[in-house]
Image (cartoon, rainbow, N blue to C red; front, side):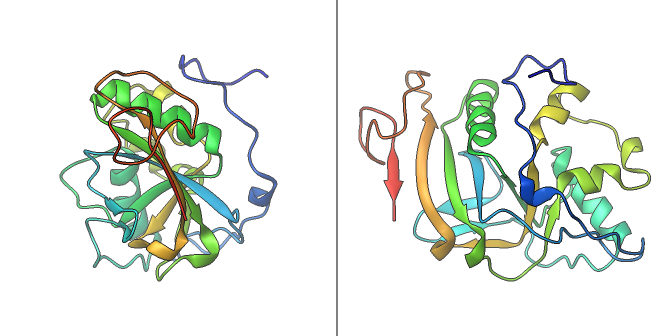
Length: 208
């Protein structure tokens, strides 16, 4: 399948059928999707500012900012997507495709030289806070002027394909599976199920 991006990462998958319909609210209200997939996937790395533990779930660094206007959402959302470190993010990035999350996790391991995981999340167990689609933020008026502060435009477009932004927290009861994808000790990629989290050989896998 052809792709509009020249980034050398893995080929993009078609959007999930659940993404076909989104609300078109007035510009004074942040746009939120009418529906989200039943499962999403987090590409997590050890250096992420979002905290994570299998038994506790995910927590964004910023737990206080309220997304009550499009301007507020655009400011914090684009800072998050551009990976700016001068603005504390209330968002947690997830993907609608395991394949995409796994490719991003491998990319993060190579780029940042960190251990990485793919964590499967059940969206029916989400806690407080709205969920936004990265593509909607990037299409908002003025978003294209925000610039790409980290990486090329092609790389950023690939990284945000199928991405959702979850606000504040993902609770422990939403975590379904954790698979270690990149291990810095050997930088080898192995099939899921090759080991157990915390072991000294193989890539970790932990399920509920």
